[in-house]
Length: 150
Image (cartoon, rainbow, N blue to C red; front, side, top):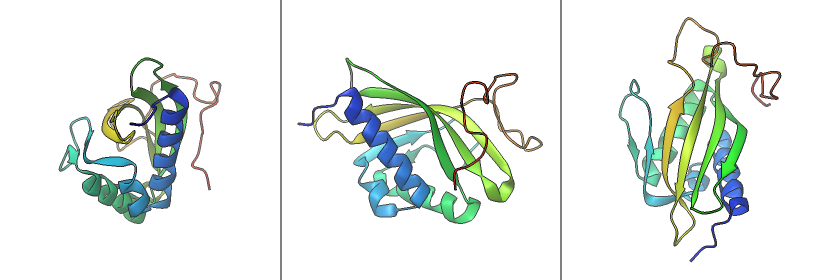
């Protein structure tokens, strides 16, 4: 049984984002329980993504086809439950756009792996905007990334 501390969860989430940015299928699969589920807001095809295999294959596709990169903006980890929430930015350089949002993580208490992610977008994706984000929120002033990391 894993000891799921706030530090453990933060390290696991950062490792997951590292795997996403690398488009590393094996590393992605290793972040999740086999039956993990990733939920999304309406508008995307084939959601939710069910199983570690599907989640990994979908993120690898995004890296290969959209040039996707992700940055973590904020992380809060519970001290009383195996759950955490983050703010992130999904950079899509090929489309010259980005999307900001939050995710709620639920960890499996036995293995310490991610068993559920619930994604929430900061705003509806608007194809006419260069970046989908909250209106009049001071991203720069609050220290958010204003472009993808190299």
